Image 1 (cartoon, rainbow, N blue to C red):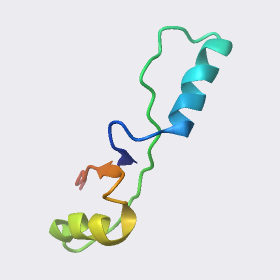
Image 2: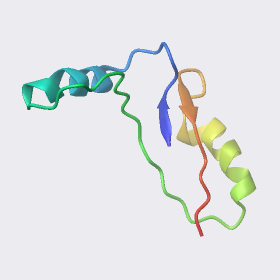
Image 3: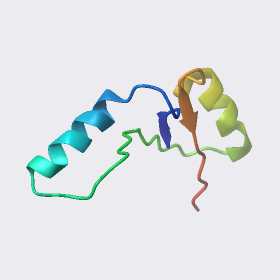
Length: 69
């Protein structure tokens, strides 16, 4: 999962947060929109390197690697 770092402007998250009450969904706060990148890899240990070099922008985004069998 790749999402904007805390404190970085998240216009998609803000738009969703404003739109949900208009659709009748109250009590929602701190919406952050990120993206999910699914990879089949031979060496999961190299995924953070892939994130740093290509998949994420480490200056403005955080990422989290989840390995699923």
